Image 1: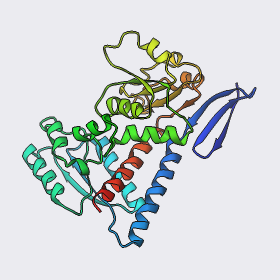
Image 2 (image 1 turned 60 degrees about the vertical axis):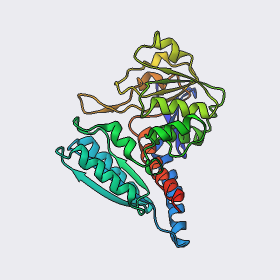
Image 3 (image 1 turned 60 degrees about the horizontal axis):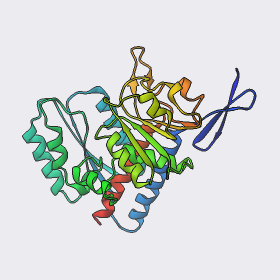
Length: 303
């Protein structure tokens, strides 16, 4: 059946030939550009007021190709909004002691507002020790236990980028999560757990599903909002989605064909959901834009 696309700002709606709405596609690229423009305007205003530009230090260890791409994208975003970026790139032989010393140096540098150590790190490095070494007020990734704890007690400081980006997407799309049943699939420290805290802060009723969850299909099927972050291609079947639900797909997976896809079976899910994020072009761009917002927030803390 023929379909037509109507786009208004960052929201695109697919219509079937008979006029029946199929799904609203949440355009993360457009939303991220709006957020970046807002950050750029505030950075510019700082300059006009005689204040220094925010500064983000990005650390890359090893030769992971995907990490190199992500770091490059973050550098480009910094340049676009007027944030100063410092790059520290080392080979896989870089030791734990050397990395801790580098973090200490950046912690002590008053010109550095944010520190981002790109994950994953080589296996010989202790990720948690590195995360906890970063000063909480410079932890623009929002991974430090202090920042996660503040989010848990309704006093957010540095909020994890992807979960915060998801909340901004929902807000910009006119989705009020208060009182909604939200099912989060995946319980990682980067997405699932902090996303649950963000949703709780917004007064949603949350369920976090994980590898031991019984009858995942039933849990997903009762959700008003589904957030998927398991890192398994097409893991969540489209037929599980409740008609009219909002689907946020955080996963990004590369198939053997080279094509990127999310954790949700998109083709089927978009026929049932009221709103859905595409992969790529959904949550990913918002994560980087939110990193820029976090860096600006950190800079304002340091004024």
